[in-house]
Image 1 (cartoon, helix red, strand yellow):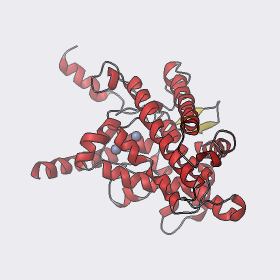
Image 2 (cartoon, protein in one colour; image 1 turned 135 degrees about the vertical axis):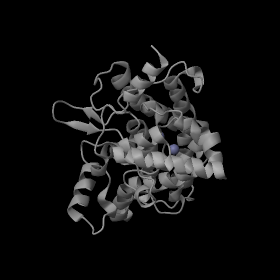
Image 3 (cartoon, rainbow, N blue to C red; image 1 turned 30 degrees about the vertical axis):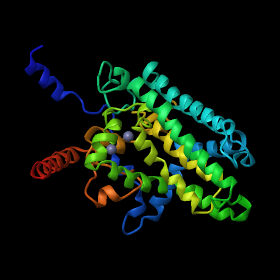
Image 4 (cartoon, rainbow, N blue to C red; image 1 turned 90 degrees about the horizontal axis):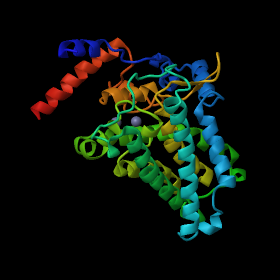
Length: 337
Ligand SMILES: [Zn+2]
Ligand SMILES: [Zn+2]
């Protein structure tokens, strides 16, 4: 094939296999005047049975009751209880990210139904460890991501056990206990936006965050695959509970929300198809656009900052045009600096 023919075929290749209407997915929390009915519908759907959130909350409760060391054992750092937390986290990640990868990419159980990006995971590419995107992503997820997740959870368990983190039981204040659980995804989104903007500063991007952006197309293992320095920043919002009264379930939930939901949201598919009508929401097209274009959509679909600060790509042709202009401006400002 001639170069010209190849270029024209590349140009006409479909950008997305499946492309949801992003404007319908943005949380209506910040609309003015407030839209109470729409907001309520959004909250119910985001915590409903066809979304990841409620299962992660259930998993956090289950983890605390059946797969966590007793707090009395955590008064001093010791190999046995930390290893117990590490093994549980390792297995959770292996089962969830590994299960999704096998289902969608190895056995192709859903074909291209609701898949975003037509490109395959990269092989024979020197930018990845082991020259292979999936192996690279698995390695950094199962070593560094699980490592920092375990370390931060262990620090919080030690802090609760020694009274350094203000601990509360459900019976102390049930309303606060539940409110805190339900506010965690919003808090995690706010923290994600702030640290993500920081990671896009010139030096941090070049030496740290570029690792995550090697994945311009993503799979389940890509979500938690980052540079260790990024892992160390990514999960720091759990330390809010050193200052705010909480229970270990809150700390476990926020850490699992970041790590395990990163695997589901980077799956590269909008939904898990559960039959002809039911679809379980997994993907995050808002963030998929960030992986494709890099200079937009730094937050989440529950935070308004991208829309307010004019960094929002809505996934449409108009968004593509806006992106081109933004890139031109960024290039010119860098060239002039
Ligand atoms: Zn990402
Ligand atoms: Zn980024």
